[in-house]
Every structure is written in structure tokens, then in C-alpha cells.
Image (cartoon, rainbow, N blue to C red; front, side):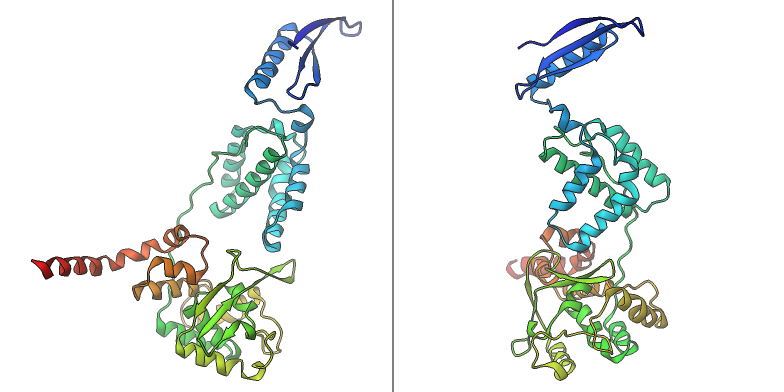
Length: 363
């Protein structure tokens, strides 16, 4: 059925002629809208008929759904870690709901999203924070796309600002040893484990005695822990998959001595506080690591940098990027190269010398 425009007569109160445009949507149902001017009705009808023809048409009742309601659905269906979902909730509450929460999702356009991003930057928000907000917004629009509320995401192609890359801090072997001596005794092995195993803080804190196979010099990384609204929540490692990490003999011996009091209890946590409770990452960083590092003049070194330190040690030892990826639990080798590729040029001279030697050996 072709759309049409009809004259609805003159309204007594306004004295204006009312025009109604009607068309049939892709779902077979008729839709109508009234206008004060025939020209506006004709323009709207042409637009809707074009959308139906090209497949860009969205049922008006879906397009009228609010950004906030779709965000609620998206969070409810999100399968990410509790800490990730909690972060998104915080972003939505602080930044996205005030600006877009009540808006019809079909009315939000790309230029205003670019303006929103610019406002965040002008407000002094760090590039990484802006990126997190934009990623959250893109997640909601992706859900809106799946729900049939929009035909394309208005956030697609909107880029977050690039921040200056923080220079990666890496400790030396001597500095790792000094840190291990500077922290309370119950955390000494934890410092060595972070620097020579390359595990994330949450993976270290979630490690249990049953995860250690000291006879074979292996540690099985099966879970991670995060703080969500003050509570410890255990889940899978960040990559979503388990992995096995080999232990240097010195670290295997340290582990054997460290877990001796609980060695017969496979469910016991490997690392605990002096009182025997689980290690909270926030307390570990602020109350244990930070004072020790500052006392040694390592103000720029973060606990997470011990993971970078392990990667640097592996690269300096000539480890293949794939092996580094597996040990650190990256989702892909691209992540490994993006994070640590800048450390590889330091090996370029050795590679050049090796190529030269191969050529000389047959010439």
C-alpha cells in the first residue's frame, strides 16, 4: 500500500489546516502522523517510505525506547565479571544517564555524541576515563541494535581521545629483592611471585594451595578475585580461561616454605594477611606495596609494574612473544605486542648480529 496524505480540515482553535500522512511499515502495520503544513507531511512521508524501501525502517515504538531502559537491559544481560558490570553501572550513573537516560534512543545522533566526548575532555577527564565511558555507551547502542531499536549505532566511528602513553616502569632484579625485604614477611613471596610469574594482582590473591604443583614446578591459574562494592568476588581470570605457569626452582622452594603451615589443605589461600584473611588488592597496594616502594625511592613503580617486570625479564631472556602471551594470560598475541612491543627493539642488535653470523658461515 502506497502512503498518502489527507486533509483533516481546519481546527477551530488554531485556524490551521491539519494534514495527516499515512504509510505502511515493513511489519505490515499502518502508521500516521499529523502536521500543520502539507509540505512537512510530504517530507516525513517520503522519508518513511524511503526507510521502508531501503530496509532502514525501525518500528517507531522501538525507536522511542529510552537510552536508560536499554542500558538497564544491557546490564541485566551482561555476562562480564561482576567488577566490570559494577564499573559500567558507575559510568552510567555518573555520566550517561544524566545526559541521555531519558532520551529516545532513535533520536540520539552522532554529532551530539562527539560533542559529549568533547565536553568530557574539556571537563578535565583523563583520556582513559573518556574511553571507558565511550565503550560503555557503545555497548548500550550495540544492545539497542540487537533489540531492533536502531538500524545503526550512532557511536560507531566516534573515537576516544588519545592520551600520552605512560612510560612503563620496570624493576631490576635487585629492586625486586629489595622490595621483598621491605614488605612484611607474609608478603615477601608475593612480591617475588608477581615479578617472576607475571600474574595479575587478582590472580595472585585468588591462588590456592591446590593450584600449586611444586613437584613439577607448576602453578595453575584458575581464578581471580576483585573487590565489588567492598566485597570480594571470585571469578575466572581476565582472559576467561585457565592457564599453567612454570615456576623457577627458587620460587618453587619459596612457595614450599611459605605454604608449609597449610600445605595439607588444598582450599587454603596461598597468600593471606598476618591475621590469615584474604588479601584485598586495594589494601595490598596502599598499605603494603606503596610504603615499601616509596621507602626505596621507587615512587613511580606500581604493584602492576611487577607484571611488566616479568615481561621485561622474559623479553631480555629471548622468550618468544607467543610464550610471553601464554604466561601473562593475554587474550591474543596482538595484546602482547601492543603492550610490550616497544621493549623488543632492544634485541634488534642481537638479531642483526645473528643474521650476519649466518651469512658469514657460508661465505
